[in-house]
Length: 270
Image (cartoon, helix red, strand yellow):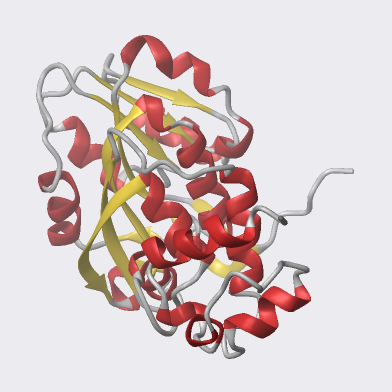
């Protein structure tokens, strides 16, 4: 059955009704766009891709740069058609596709790619996981996400710090850029946004039994306010090799290196 599209009441741009189901909040601040395109190195050899062009506000700014190509993945066929007509530039290719099911192997011949995108809030983490699986194709990028999500991604301790922080910092280096108020968009969202610059790590830290480690991290942060001892017991991990001092800590108090030390001690049951 076809998914029913939800619309913003009476909200249109360029004669096209904006669709709430696609998380369409269109940027309207030129200074923010300049910050996005100015943060990355663009030249005549650069391959850029954008996730969700909307009415082409960011697309236009990218095309003003001397780039080799711009590929856009746009799920809304109406906006894909509008932007294609609006910018008859042979460097621009628009795929009328859901980015989450797109064939990323087509990016291989033109790598490395730079991503510039205002991500739909409701699929931010699925997109980040997609990027993590395709780091070999990526060089760097600037994305706009919800402020709360941005803080989770860059956190190294305390509130918000957890599995997403550790997982995405393992694959990328992150930098907080400007905080964006709701009024910079049409229609305005109910939350603040944030620009994030990322660079793909050339080499990730070695983690023994990496799939097992991320399951372990999930257990460690399953109830962030509980001591590590209680979370590990609930997860069925042995505690005999861990000091009482370590067991009294909360996972939010421990950095990646410290958690790796614990993992080395608990991953073998002997």
